[in-house]
Image (cartoon, rainbow, N blue to C red; front, top):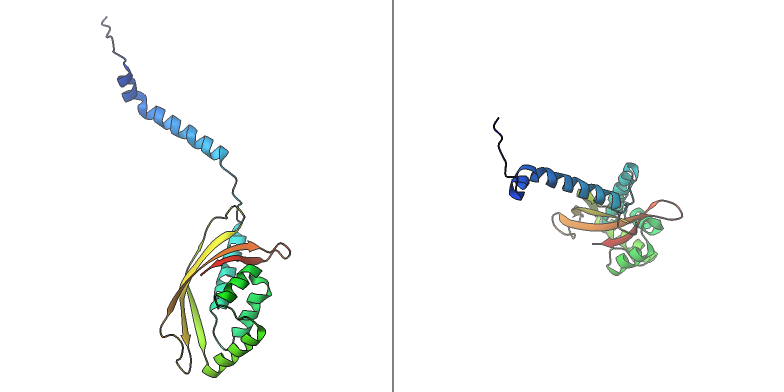
Length: 181
């Protein structure tokens, strides 16, 4: 019989079994990473859909400049949809009126001009919850304003908002905890 002696050096073993060793190491590392990852706050599908609908609603209310619905939209924003810090921020940015008298004056102005607006939301992107449990939602689109006196901006005006959404501790209703415009 003829016996053949093979030279089994390290380069021969790496060439023959290197891919298998790499695969085993990769699988073991992935198992360790999955086992040790922090447990993120899972968001249920119903809650996710609720936050998306709420983000659409708040966006429409913020951009509403129709003489028919302005007062209702503004009062809804003040009635608990926005956190107090967000209300203060939006008043300083002049996106919300400072007082009830300012709301009535704005309604009179919009009625005199017969101004209406239409909001189209082009994209709504919901991110993963942050360490505080707030969910970031980016909303972008265009708003078109038309009035009988044509004193508003001409053509569609793009907008992009970023909300940090949470739940009110007392009522468990969605609330805007932070805002970037």
